[in-house]
Image (tube, rainbow, N blue to C red; front, side, top):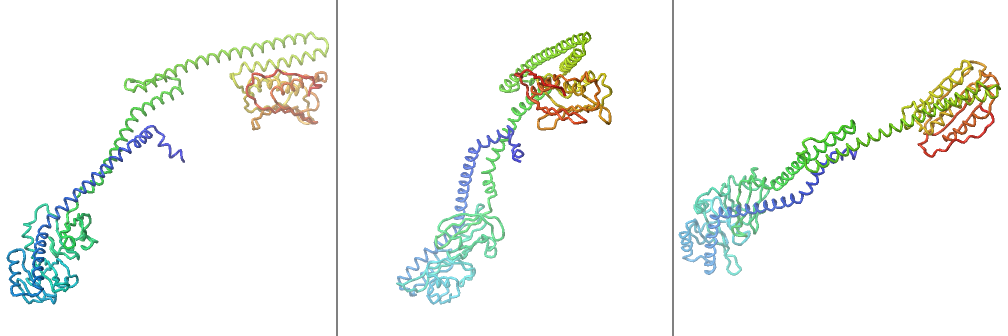
Length: 582
């Protein structure tokens, strides 16, 4: 599973891209940090612009309220100087203030009981139901309120009120009304760069004025926030939705901290989201473009060349055909050098292989020639023994010479099988054994009569230094079996030769022959012990173990051995005399 997931990351291009990514991360981080800082600076600049524009848009309300507050302070001081009572020329003083300030529609002094005792108009009028009186009853301090329908004039006005205290006793308050229509005249219309709406409100969160009008005001205010929650000693801006669901940017500016504030509403800047997104998008695009360029470059200049070189090497491994990369001038110098070195290496390898093959061929020729000469010499010896056999007069001499001739012929058969074999390293012991056993049975069964022979050989590979003594042992074992084979009480005489691979790295050679009525005359089966001596010596040389089982009906010979590696220090055969053969 780990290899399955790791394979896509094993490629050179992927690793180069990963390394480049790590190398570019600091640059990308710096770029993002700079972009974020620029974005913040731009946001601060735009916030400053919005706040400034909001303050400028509310200048009319600010001037009107400031003028009314100044006049109210002056009149309050004068009333206090007069002891808080209405004198004969009190109303004239208020009338003079209204005449001199065209934006004022009313100026007057109301008693603590809620009656106008001195003013520019409406003397004696009860104003206890008015918003100003109620506000002053709750909190006896300077305040600014709005009244959509003033008690005195019936117009929508902003009222600036200041309490009158003589000593510590509350006597009433001075009120000055500024009609909303006169505030608009003061600011001289609506410029194109003004906010969509300007709302002024007092410290209690009550609306003083609004460009949208009182009917549409509720839909223009920020959703989820009250005006009183927006009050702050500092100006600020924030983004949100109106209660109508429109995306807006709002700016809050204190007109008179603790008294009146302005709320500007602007269409949300569509570039603000892109500005925030661009802080990540552009560095990411830079990284992606860099990775694509790096991946493409590595693929075109490295991977493709390596793939071509790999193809050439694979072709050489399969067919030994050397094909240098064409158009080398287009290759980087390093690849030209690699290709040159590779071609030289391949050419040298081909030459070395040719030389090695020639050496092996010569060695095989010499080895086959050795086996051939040994076989010829053994046949010559067999011929000489055969001549001696023909001239021998005693039965003992003829029997001994016959055994020698048969064994020499068996050894010659082994060497003939070796030099006709195509293998020069390990040899197929099963194939060689079949040839040797067939020749041995053909030579040893003459005059014996019909024998039922069965052979079975598994594939066994042996080095020649172990194969030669094994084949000689097999030939001797089969020769002994043919010598002592007998006809059982039922059925024909039987000979079984098998070579099997039972597993575990072992091999098993078995010769099974029937016993009973001898097929050869007693003079020919008289044992001298030579066969058993040869078998014991050969089995010791190949590191095998011989086991024999004899019953009244059969004789079973079994050799178990382990195919051994090549041993150049193999010891010569040592033969010991053993009485009897089988």
